[in-house]
Length: 274
Image (cartoon, rainbow, N blue to C red; front, side, top):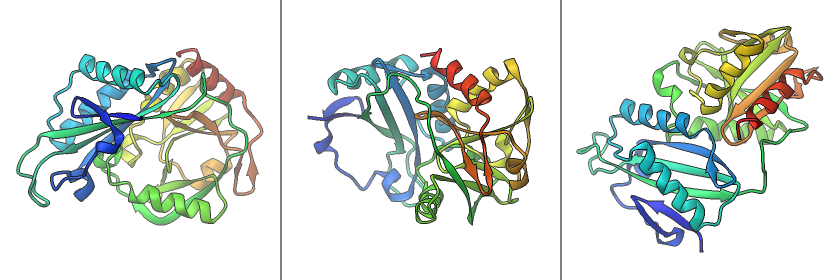
């Protein structure tokens, strides 16, 4: 039997039922957090919890679990599902009747888990990258959240699959490149690393928060609105997220990236944190 945590209760995943107060399902009124698990322990938990607090505050959601209380619930689920290595997803949504205007701001949450066998963040091989231009992301603070409205990422992922890319880059309303379908973006040119500022509309990634001080130890880090030409002039292109860690891009348009020194440095650094 597979278990989930639903509003403090450990129950069978088969017992989850949608209600007319699940505004996450009805209106996308909520957000989610994905956390990597290594050796039965949540990786980077403090950054994840801080983002939960910031997201709940921004959306005006009342989320009552303290950091310690949430960690206890995650641990209970990890042990119940016999999860050693894998990931956990926390979905938090406003639990209220009403239509677009909610009558209350109380929240409900569900925590689910997935198993995998990786003992550390793994090195990837081929990763081809395209550009998705059909729909643009706004340059607002809402874009920094991992909200339950993920239609842009769904459509971009479908575009990548249809066109034979492993992933695609997303553009904001100013046609600047901000991220991929599931990752933040870093470019290295000589000893300088570039990444989009949050004001451009990229997700405020939990792995991004880990990488920034690591990068600043060895490289000059510059926040910059990126264009396609910046990728074409880069030595290395790196994607980062909570579950994969980091991934090196090997092919973008006619450019093949063969340098791996920056990628190897980052991968070793984050694996040393496990």
